[in-house]
Figure 1: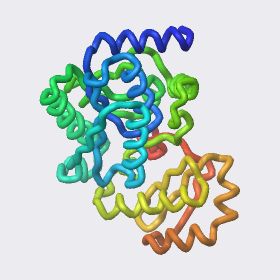
Figure 2 (figure 1 turned 60 degrees about the vertical axis):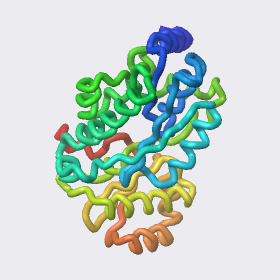
Figure 3 (figure 1 turned 30 degrees about the vertical axis):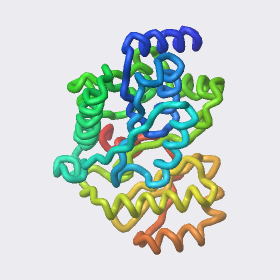
Figure 4 (figure 1 turned 180 degrees about the vertical axis):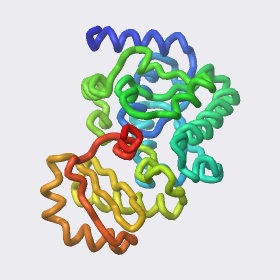
Length: 268
């Protein structure tokens, strides 16, 4: 299926929903989905909802608000409390399930209160390559994933976002901060804050796609392969900052950034 056909199919799917709440992180995928909703449905039939908690990078909220304003859609900011759920904070392989259950349960209530028909999320077919137990929660709660229904991949979304003039077209991938913590290590607000501060520092040093994987008193830095040499060039200041944040040992992952690298232990 050619790209225009996929886009036309996506518009037909969204038009059939008639009214929607969009789970809006402000990332590339959710911005694209929100834009297509805005091009397809009346403004009063769309509501973007951004969920804020210790798992959401602190600097992203302001960016999400700007994006929603540029797209021309109402945005509502809510707080989620996944950390209060021991099943989430204990960090089992089903962690993502409990997080999505918390998020989408709240979005369903918002949809009902605003008389909007469906809750949409921005999963795409590229996400099927990664381990995502949150998909079970989506099926249980009847959350719609129109980008998957339309057969759109991450590459498709990037290309179409660029054509539509979205500033998010080349934005680095976003992910819950808990994804930096190995399964079995307890998730706390303090630990998530440390990881967020470390990644924000690395981004300020000029690295776009960054993951700081936490391994007790050691951290493992993932950046795009093209940026690994620059990490070594800036190693002294990076080491100093990350030691200030509580890491005794700072390592660089020579494989570079890749989605879901902590899930690799499951394959083994």
